[in-house]
Length: 435
Image (cartoon, rainbow, N blue to C red; front, side):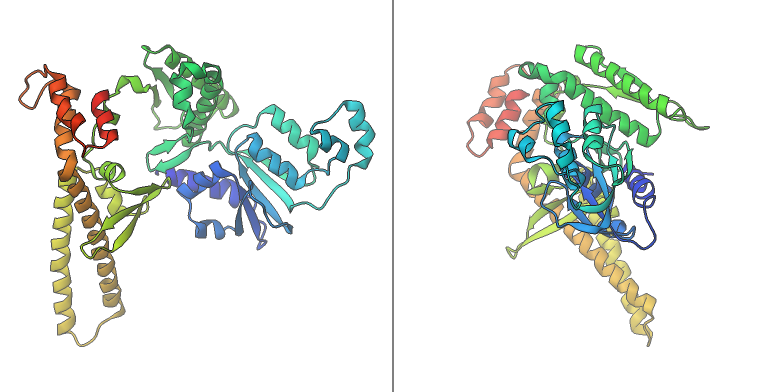
């Protein structure tokens, strides 16, 4: 089972189905992170089948729905917990609100009588945090929200985004800076704790208890590996069956920093998906992106590709040359099959429903192949116009030898024509300099 399917099933079975109450409708309330996580593994109609009639962003203004229960899937952070408290919390005393904090225990006691329960945003709440909630936030929740409104409060241990069948993201861009930048050393410990917790939730979701190995050249790797091991031990203590199974050999978790290979990210990649991301206008949305292809007519067309597209999964990691060969082969097969189908339909007086369905399916297949052919052509045009020359110098710089195996001695002589050329983009020039 793929990672996306595993997460999707876990959300449906442990959250949406578990709190399904007959035919009653419910509201799903999410924050930015949980929305991205859900969008990566579930479609709206799959969520609707479980009685969810609306999906709302907790950080946006929402219409009160006093007659409906709400299912919250949130990250355990201040920005998500505060709106939850607002949805169900007591009305605070004006004097306390004016100063923005609770003045003292005595003042709080004096004004306690004036606290009034207001009409809540929803009838009740089933709260699911993506990972363990810090004690401070838990105390705030229980202090400000009456227990009669919170029907459920659990941790689902999905603090990551399943981008592809075997690819995940922690959705933490600052992690790189916190890990390496000396100016942000004060944030490093917290960043490592956060990332280690997220990785531990991934292991818990997969049901594995891995042996943690690391690249010892970097002291931070040792520290990070130890934090991950500590988190995994806690999860194992909560669930002793984690990592068990009759056919399970112990998995390995490798902690490798970018320093182990600083070259690969700088090279132009020539596989289909990598070229599309690198060379064509794209809009990345976790599990899908839009690629714009310019046809001869000058009409701009957008092609949607994602994990649900079997053709895309088959082609995306192939070299662009192999992609062209496979598409051409499939088109020839299609044309032959289409001609045979037309002949059989012409010879027969009647067309069955299955024949008509087959024709429709073949037309959709042809459209898919045409779209991928156009995308591959656009990638090839970009490659031929500028990237082919860059690839040669990038390979020479990365390997230290040229195509004939001779050592590259005069690096500046190799680089200068590209650095001086106006048609080479600043980003490509930076790539060459870094190499």
